[in-house]
Image (cartoon, rainbow, N blue to C red; front, side, top):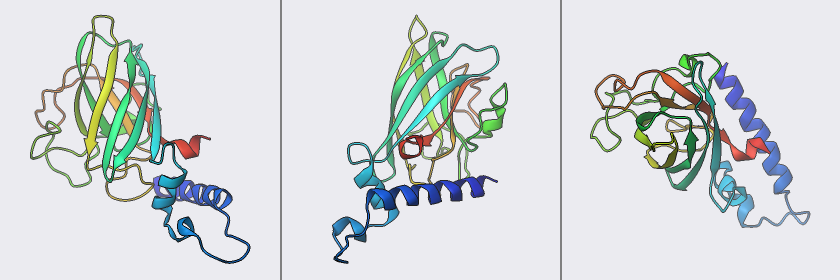
Length: 201
């Protein structure tokens, strides 16, 4: 089902790109018509880069909410920024999860940590860690966390082994202590699906 949904997203995006970049009547090919889909996304994206957004939804019993913006600032380097509110003060585990599904009350429908290459859970700067291991965000005394995180090795492309398009971002109740398999970070208190901004128009 997920592969069908991704194929549909690619088809829709291809149609949008055709509308945005029609072939010239004369048949002469200009620079951007030689680009592949990934390159055209950079041309037609916001500020010349691929961008996505995740709207965080609280799980059952939680009051956490927020919006996160994803920008691919270099190839396979994604900058995540935003604000999260309703947290308990202190550190909270922050991970990309494999399924773009936040429907279950406990957030477990998002599946496990995104880790296409396998390996053990760890800190994002550790030699061995899941690709979706982003460390912790820190909430102040009022429960507000300003997110400013670099995720290396992932991409906002629609396809590929490092693609996080259509996957989920999850915030946990406790601090990630980087122990295997999931860092003892507790329950999932918020979940949001990472959606390409071009698909949200």
